[in-house]
Length: 294
Image (tube, rainbow, N blue to C red; front, top):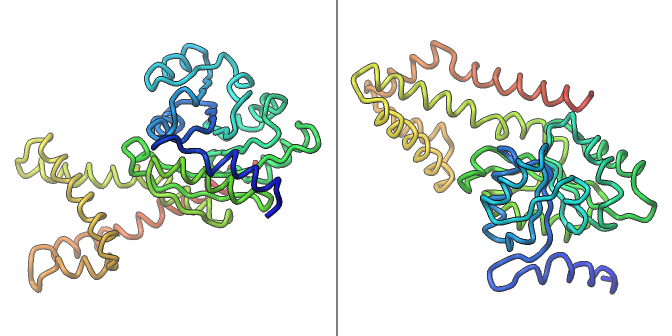
């Protein structure tokens, strides 16, 4: 390792901790549902005053900043001025415009983290190359988080460009682990991730709602039905993750011969549950791919 690399690590990763807090400087452009959820989680491991947010309006940024005790910037360019790690939490259609807007204010070695569905790292790379001075060494990272980040239970996929420094990627992973589970994947899998874990919570919520509707049908109060349905899904998922057993194996364990559960399983097969889920994920995947081609 060269002396320069060692110094970079020292600045970005190794001394990030003061006690139990990470002290690197962070900016987040956009503090809506996903950006806000991640910043709330990250604020549990980063000194809040080291986080700066911006939003579509200064009032929106100030309101969010007040909720977690971080800083609000009146413009995107001001938000990133001193940030070592910059999160882009804006819709895919606005990412290129935002990158062009902030390019002149980025630190030369800032790490850029995009969470825009369908937008390839190569697009970020081309935009920055055309807008920033020669010699800048930005590490580019693409992530796909999901809504459970709001309760620290996210599934977050991370991909990085070939020129991204490993210590920059590790720094981003450490921050994101405050919001849930983080795994690094090949970028070619990001559209799949978008469809399965990015959009998946919506499908799970629909299943929970349907399960609760059935309970209400047979007399259970609505509020209680939601608790029974949600805890059943949560417990089942936890059991699979903690035991490492296959879902088919666990399903078989619930289905007694000539019992009640196998009757329900047969009904789900008749109505095409598996195919419906596969079709939903396929439609989401195809939309993500299409977004990347625009």
